[in-house]
Length: 229
Image (cartoon, rainbow, N blue to C red; front, side, top):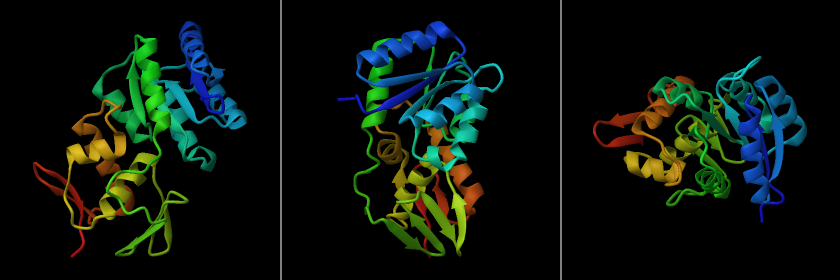
């Protein structure tokens, strides 16, 4: 059932690439390979994968920079990007989410667990429960367009990372409703992805940097809401 879904594996360790590729192929995915960030971008442009697995530390161009560059390209706006790394430090994880990663998986690789995670990510359909699924939300001076994954503020286009957009859409779909952290995690990342409260905070901070501070307010000890006076 995965025959039409394409996955690109980018890692400078060839044995890791081979292990992941073998596991993915057994699941029926079309698999592409690259061995540094620069090569990964070139292969991605040719293959147009549904999901890209990126190691963080690689020669020529690391995974963080490769992800940042691809997220700036329209063709990769909806592509799932997952970081794979031995570096479990919090700053590395935050850096990954800052450039638009969808998930973060630590080495050493456990093939069965990895496949479960990848399958779950690709099953997502961005239909968060309880949200009005209008193609376009117009609220205050913002227009939030689900079709293009773009936001317009007083006619000016604002480009958001995929998770930033989904977070804004979730909050704006229910103005003045307080969403708890648990509700946000379930709606945006689902139960299959291990993320922390810090992850939400990072995405809120990035969202405020791009659209302005006054739209999303913090309800201390509870969560966040889209503020409409």
